[in-house]
Image (cartoon, rainbow, N blue to C red; front, side, top):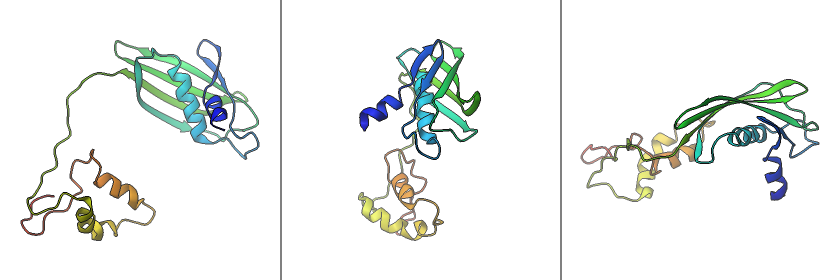
Length: 175
């Protein structure tokens, strides 16, 4: 199954900037959007130097795809600069676009660090368990359709800037 997935996510080269991709589940009611998105990304990546990593991807799903039909991916080389490449990919079936995606790639390198260190307080414990206890009333007010687990993960991830953390009850310093 993994081999099939890797094969489906690797579009076949047809000609310069044109690729053909198959579908994972040909008898499904429609093509899975994530599959088309990944195929568009792989097609775009095949047209840039390997030292350029994906920087961003934006996409619009325009129509449902037919899983019984192959997907034609046409890549437009919008820009090849000194450190940045930009590609526009159109995924087509029956001559009509089912997805339009814009992908940028850039060379990796050292850059400035912008993340602030979260302020601390001598009264607060370092464990996330005590932090979760402090945040529980606020987190319980999050609407049900939002993912509470994602909020917990964000609040306690190393990338968090500390803006979600509740203040210390003893000295009112930010946690």
